[in-house]
Image 1 (spheres, one colour):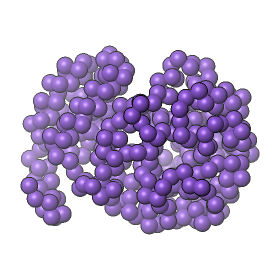
Image 2 (tube, rainbow, N blue to C red):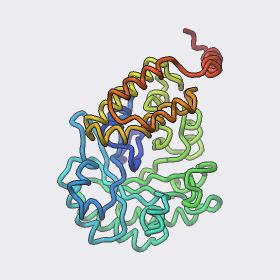
Image 3 (cartoon, rainbow, N blue to C red):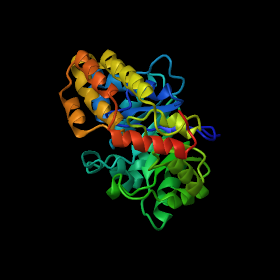
Amino acid sequence: MTLYPDDAVILAPLAGYTDVPYRLSARRHGCIYAFTEMVDVSSLVHSTKRSAKFLRRDDSEKWLGVQLVGRKIDEMIKAVEVVNEHNFDVLDLNMGCPTPKVAKRGKGAGLAKEIDLAVSIIDTMVQKSKVPVTAKIRIQDKICPESTIYLAKQLESAGIQALTIHGRLYEAIYSGPCHAQIIAAVRENLKIQVIANGGVFNKESYDALRKDSGCSVVMVARGAMGNPWIFDELKGNRDGLVEIDKFIDEMHKHISDVVLHHGERFGMRFARKIILDYLKGRGYGGELKSKASKISTINEFEIYLDEIRKGPSESFVKQYAIWRMGRGVHA
């Protein structure tokens, strides 16, 4: 049995990003499979009211997974019990987060270095969870696949039903190439479904990762930041760049949902990084971007949108026109 159909594109669990508004934005552009933000089990167990926001699911979401990060079995048992009270399709264990405050505490990518503990945690999750359990890891060596294969097979034996592999080392964070050949070697040695992850920002990099890894399912992370249209692009439904009116309309909907979800005061502070993600690579200057850090109200955001409507730099417009002509796209 496979959890995901061939050609599925999954929105990764991104801490501080993939809340309800973020996922709804992606779903407007073809995303079907998505995860909550990564949820720390200690926070979930000891601060359930604060963590409840992480577990929210919009009524319109047809498929949603939840990802936990932790290393204490007793806390994991309690966290799974909390998750069981909600409506999720998959429960995932994060063993790939490279952030120092996570990994250096033996969670995320740090847990992957303690295979016996990781296997015990997975075994516990499988016993307690009412939905399929999966895991997400990073490659353990960029040249020899054996250590990654060993880790993956141990997790498979513990009961996971799918495995997502990020093709970079823990130490590399998000820099350097994605070593898809290691992912391919793991896929060839497992019976469960393997999902490839790492470095997907457009159709070209998506096609390359699929070909080099041999995986029919791919997870997208940073490539979706400020670019929910990537799901349409990867399915061949549009070109990479987005017309300015559609870009502004989506950003407005997204930020408006953030305010509805989080309230105006916190929501607009939270939205600043989202706004900057939307502007990245679209030809807007540093002065306009710096203004985003001062937006505090929805009214200020509306005024800011008027400045964005004036369009990007002239040089960027020319480059965009050349790009469209090169792809045979005409106004």
